[in-house]
Length: 86
Image 1 (cartoon, rainbow, N blue to C red):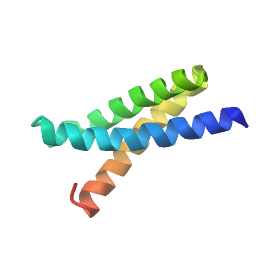
Image 2 (cartoon, rainbow, N blue to C red; image 1 turned 30 degrees about the horizontal axis):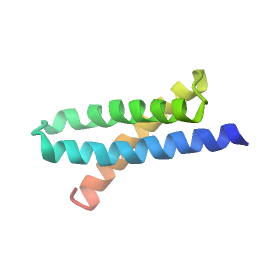
Image 3 (cartoon, helix red, strand yellow; image 1 turned 135 degrees about the vertical axis):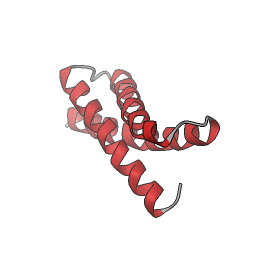
Image 4 (cartoon, rainbow, N blue to C red; image 1 turned 45 degrees about the horizontal axis):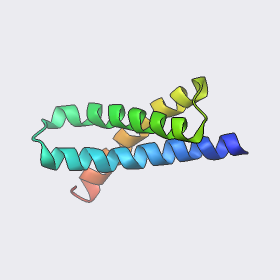
């Protein structure tokens, strides 16, 4: 059960933080719109790996979950920009 909790924290935390980080960086630095999905994937992956390291669950499954956190960050960011105008 602890592994499941760590993976859910990694997915949700990584994706959620990546959406916020991408939005903040978009406003702070003039990044072209075509690079924003790539920024969301990379930041979601990086934040998710940091969360996995912090929970002590850093292993092969953590990197797979980090990849999916990055992908879900792109979807969440695109949805937020289209619906809420962030």
